[in-house]
Image 1 (cartoon, rainbow, N blue to C red):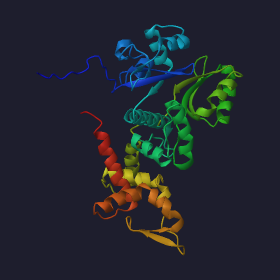
Image 2 (image 1 turned 30 degrees about the vertical axis):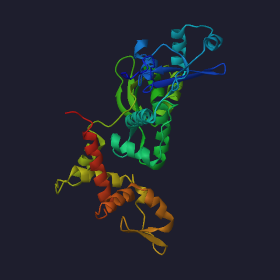
Image 3 (image 1 turned 45 degrees about the vertical axis):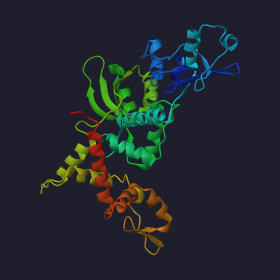
Image 4 (image 1 turned 30 degrees about the horizontal axis):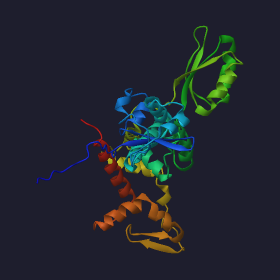
Length: 358
């Protein structure tokens, strides 16, 4: 007697799915969707429902395959049309994502926040924007955590205020054009002086003289209200006015070249970045460690430096100590703070180059 292997053919396993859950009238209803398709549907990128739903079926538990009862669907949704019910759950339900998907979303939003901060801020000394690598490092230094319930712009504006308290960074000014009639132009000029605006150019020819200047973003609303008194108007030319030229790294190179005009010395750009970061005191938290005299000190064997007892804990949290700790485990000698900054910046630069396809 031959034996055959009998397998169930009607069983449909829902394992690699994204579950959307909705609680209504004390009942839990779930639908099974394809991974990474729910957000595309909600952002109106994906418009084919069959590409989003794995099946037009409503469950009470997707992982166990328990279907929702018809009477529960009628009581909760007042209809037995499964497609219509799936659409409501898809739009209003809570998306259950895996740990890797959540991590990818938070990482993407973190990079988006850092990009907004880079666009809206400048170095007050050079009037150049920071690089994205520097901004991300500053966000880690202030222990910034992404909130998925807030937009990236809201979080960027909040973290900019926090960054200005600890680092040499400020909001980029707005470049605007103020226009008024000839009879009111003198009053407009007085108002601009009260606002401490940086005047770029003036055009007093024609019947509508204008002034192009840079103002702080926080006073834009008040400027619009006060211009009504002088019958003027304001036009925003640039929401983020940066100094013309290259990036902040290029500015550091040019500044160092201009300071050493008598003796032209070619130095490594990575060394210039490290020196510029040191001048801006971005890592000032650990800059003065071990300099106290007559105080109890402890020696950090990984960094080979003396640190005050009350500052030892902060030193161990710094990037300098972490980098030297990794070198110590690999049997390498410790680096000074300046050498550590240069090596970390070089590693970040190499990592950024891998993201580009030449």
